[in-house]
Length: 194
Image (cartoon, rainbow, N blue to C red; front, side, top):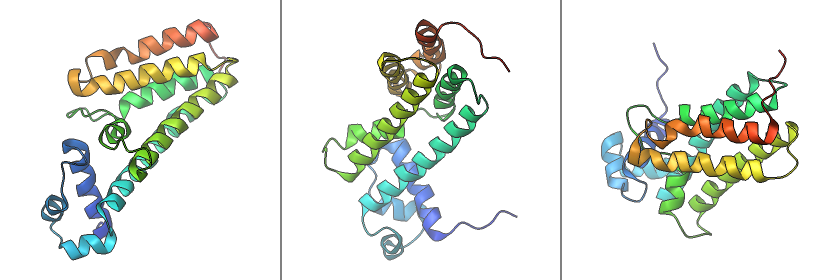
């Protein structure tokens, strides 16, 4: 028997699905209350403001993504080139197969353009952390400048932004191919030794 979710986690799960599928700003507190089958007082006891709930949603997604990335990269310990490719593949694996809204963080940036808004800041921080991870792996692979990092960020974000329009079989399906080309261009076609 599966352990019962806490009320807080249940509310967060319901809100997270709604935020991702319908958009953060288009989902009101009343809808979250109705779908989670809790009172407004209960929701506000766990999340004093809607912004608190949005931040919890993005923090949970941040955790999910980094655990997934870390697991993918760890399988190729000692081979930064393959770790870069694993990170690319892991990015696409995070997208929901049956429903395509793209990246939760890019979506949040689109909805919260106010640069000092906590949601905007959290989404920017996620993207900066991803860029830093790519930069470190590129440096470990012997790339001395940031061109590969910037090129990979461009194709990752381009692929993620294309998913809501074309699905996973559109331009996003070419992410690994384009990333491999760029990585080979900067690092070479050498293979790691097992």
